[in-house]
Length: 115
Length: 111
Image (cartoon, rainbow over all chains, first blue to last red; front, side, top):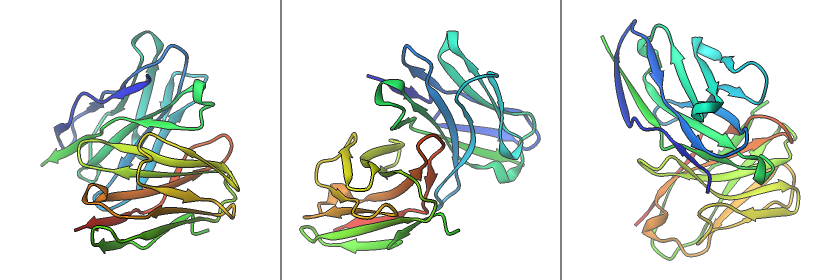
């Protein structure tokens, strides 16, 4: 069965430091890949997505992610974290064998930003 | 555009009571989804619909029913609520190809 793994439950980063959130999936073919962010008490907002083409994807709020087929990974990065980035981040994957109709979500990584 | 809206925002039920959650979207999207979010478990798909009049089971469908009588609305029903259904419920919609847009969520507490 397809699965999505976000190995870090919590990450604490100092404001201004760089950030990398990890996401791995298990699937043989190329999936559709997404990163969403959720602020407390809010819904999910799309940060970026990868369907095909350039494997380095730029998103909103200064985030980027890189698809590495050989590692089945889609890690999210930001060069300089702001206090307002504190939130929960979800990686989601759509799989071809479901016609890309459904997404499988990781369990999320909560980002804490220290002063 | 309002995007995806959910009604109600918060509800408290007693075990055995029934209720319906309403999701509405004004983007003319074909696909609609219901998820539940529980701590440490991410979002899990309950049911989804690929078009008006069609529904399909997701990962955790037991105890829930859905209907999509109109393209813009997707209803999630709990016939006999259980404490295990205490959760935050999110609705989402998308075009045939594209990202999912999420509603603000409904917090449900079953006592």
